[in-house]
Image 1 (spheres, rainbow, N blue to C red):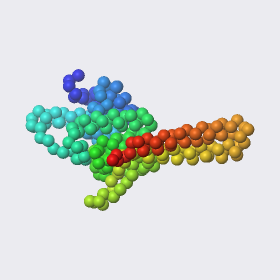
Image 2 (image 1 turned 30 degrees about the horizontal axis):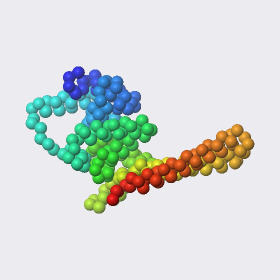
Image 3 (image 1 turned 60 degrees about the vertical axis):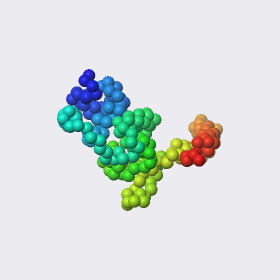
Image 4 (image 1 turned 45 degrees about the horizontal axis):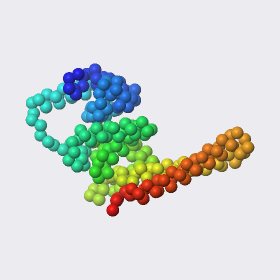
Length: 240
């Protein structure tokens, strides 16, 4: 396998994997490449919805010829201004790994990509336009992902003081906020189970099942909230 160069067959396998809604890690395993290689390849060539193997291969060949004939000159990539001087390839690797873990945990892929991008910026915030440039996806895809992440208490919006654009922000205590939002949702489920148990009768099999589920959830949620509050104080978002 010559260096890190992808063959046309590799790219056709990537396209087939994307059509089959495989994760980048699964596609990488299929063709024997790192997840980060698949992520960069897809992001460079239109994103998962617009990736075409033949067009990507032609673009890759042009890029290889240019590298051979043109001395490299450092230039900032659009949407990559908040890397703190780090190599963009390093940040892409962290993005890819973070995204893959989030997808395995149940987060939809586009939502995971947006969240990973926010996590790996020093400011913890990006505008829609910056996310579009960075992820090579449509504004509509970003909007849908943002809406979902907001409902999960993973990000929030704020007005950019220097422009009319909205910035999407991930707070330093995002894990705590997400746990608390999940606890509130689980509490509502537990309360609904308790009400249903009363209606069906606690002596019936269904009623007993619902009653036990409610009690179990309420005890676990109480332990989880107490633990989260304790460790949130021990590891504050902004240490002094």
